[in-house]
Picture 1: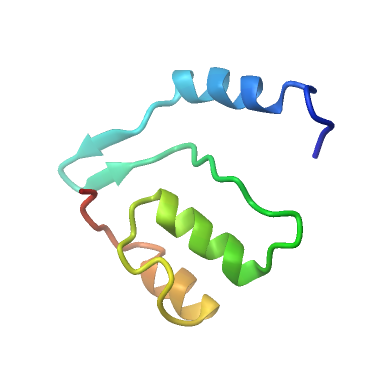
Picture 2: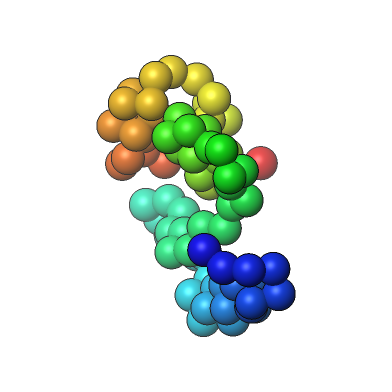
Length: 79
């Protein structure tokens, strides 16, 4: 996406400050997720990394399709 030192992390941090995560009665609202993804990542690896950042205790369980479908509208508590 960009060379080292191009400012990717700075842009993320600035943007994230304007859109912080919130706790509501319905659950967590996380408008921005930041995860480091290896260059040779698979789709399953990407999904697991994002679910882990969201606090999903089962981030590495199930198939990629089940991970995305069954959890798309689920809420879980962060520790």
